[in-house]
Picture (cartoon, rainbow, N blue to C red):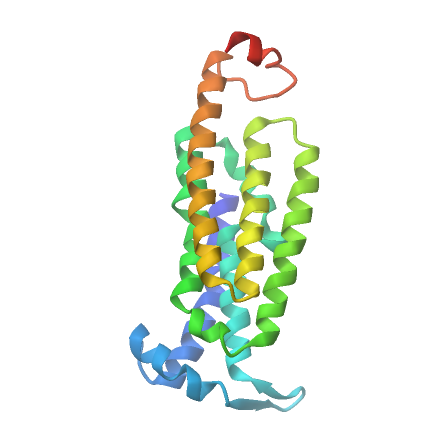
Length: 213
């Protein structure tokens, strides 16, 4: 339930960003919307209390938070640990090809927005670094193997986020593909290990697996 709620919450900034993009292009066709981004890069809107704001930066931040919520990045990665209650095959699909990765598909689909928003790129880069460190430290305190793999997924995807923040889109895509394949095989391997130990995933109860293998 928490996964569904957070995923739906991530749709709010996504809808806001898409609404702002559609209002600038006058259409909902993605191809046409991307065509007006260079023109929108020079547009500012005035808020009475705050002052002028860069419209494309607001759109970039909206899309960024949607990506982070979907991809379990920044402060939003704890939900991924709670999603590990699912069976291993579902967890493998979740980490390699569906909910986690769909956020990055959103980023790549609208990557021209981020070409004109350096402040958003800086935020993306630092958020990725925070995720790398935070998820890695959190993994040290996990005793459940599936939750540890969840921390590993968030941390590895943090490297993809850093690459995107630096504008290394091709390198980030290669790293994303490697991470997806790696996690799919890792979960399948751990599922076999759990089967050997009667479904247990607690490291404290499955010692000696090297001998049994």
